[in-house]
Length: 509
Image 1 (spheres, helix red, strand yellow):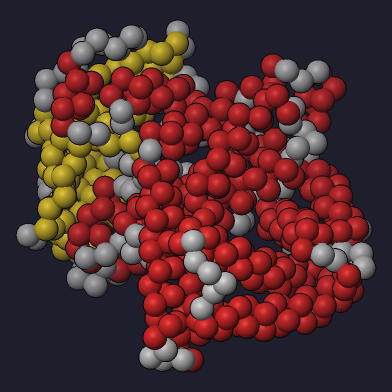
Image 2 (cartoon, helix red, strand yellow; image 1 turned 135 degrees about the vertical axis):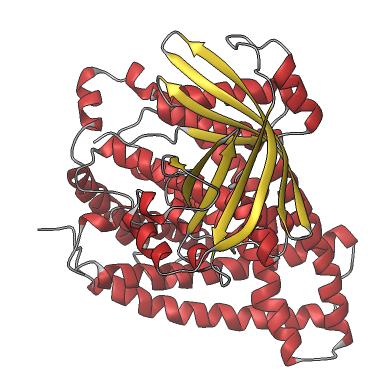
């Protein structure tokens, strides 16, 4: 089965840059048509029953014609960056439930009393782009606003849709537009932005969808599907991370990057290094940019804040927390700059173009290219066995392992755990439950030990930047807290390792 790339993409920009894209010559593009006024009204129940199901229902007006469209939002996005039903023609301005193509949406709407919730009003100009002989991409240049009662948000977007040819050409074209007009990824759909206006808040941090690999896939199809899910996971949390309202958005972006790196590692036996070097380095670079901010979140939430709650009113501890909050704010600002940067946009667009163009096919010999098309289950069995052996090797003589050895063990456990998540749909019947529980306990214990080591390192670095002396009483309290936490994590690690050793490798027949 062929895993398709999303065939639509949305970029945001400024009014001046949108005008530039509408009027200036673009290689392979025809002239923009006249501006046409458009209006879309989103319908839901008073209690937003459709939104809670991950559904958005819009009725749009195009000239004298009306049509409706249903969008799947939030977790329903799963792998794709956007997804919607085909437009359905209407006789008037109200939705027609019987015309919805999706049976789940049809059943949900039938039982609900619908009312207009918000609207989108905009002007659209269209250009057609032919980046290659067999490729046609439609550029829809939209300018207007999303309106919900008295609340309003500007709309200034470029929608790209692959009308003919390979979908990856879409992302190649988007890279060219980004170079021309400094566009940005718009990771939220109009429905998500409209509902955020209605509710006064976003939809919350999004976790990864782990169940994307299917039995009928080849190994390379599974790799592409996992990577596409990582892109969706990362981008779904981008707006919330930039807003800075909840540290969980940053955490989920970090998880997406770790899953990315694990995917490249798990499938490294199939993919030539020269083909993967560039995307792997970009993933590592972004992970390094986000790492300190996430580390400070952990230091504050798991060590400084609990200690402060136990010792309320401790002046030295309050002063230390204030200084460390400044360090945390500095790293958060740096992380937001990295995620808001043009490099981030080019990284995502380039990665999607890379996945679509499949450059490994041009550098692999025929025999190795055949290995890409092996059944994913066969590859999964070998990959899980290899990673399992590595964890057992890294964990020998566990009680005597130093910090560096424990770090290597943590990385090996993390790769095996993510691989188990990737391939979980291939192994049904619950045989994997014991192993996956043991891996989760192992990663939690090893992660706790690593967090303690990171906290000590960051405290020393913060003191060095202040050129302070040996440390305050509050710092001594924090060190004692860290030492106690390390002892507890070590105790848990011993029990988790025993459970792991006793768990049968479920991938073995």
